[in-house]
Image: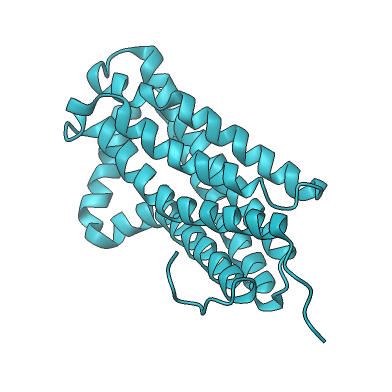
Length: 234
């Protein structure tokens, strides 16, 4: 018995879904590197606000492409819309990284940069929820189990990172902040690479696990729908 012909609209939506996942996979690390370099170094100063805008626009493009899939699923759409709003907010605040680099003493710019970091953490959390909803709609039980496990781990790590960052903001308003900061710096210097890892892991590990989930979901779609074996790039 001949198989029914594939639905052109479904294939188009799946193609955009895979394209969006690829954009997110590459956009997340690029946005992290470019935004940090724009805010803290002079490497990209000659390009002005353009690098951070382009990097965050790539992330938004990825989220926007996911929206073409299963438009009738309400829970999926809600999770996707939340992530899209946060991506737009980060994109709109991107120029302030460059302006703060040029005028670090400006209190308005100095307040926007922590706000952008908070929005970035919330976006990463929302993206994990999007991936969980997406995996629930795909016919792969192993993928659903792995996605639930890693998104839960990411949620705890992001909550820890947010707590540490908020505590830092509160302490920075205290009179003895400079002495506290010097004490923390001394502990980190004495601890060497291990102390540095304790600071960096809660930030970088959720990004790495999110990228792994994005790649895994993309590969499952390519293998199950398009017949492409896992491991091939897009």
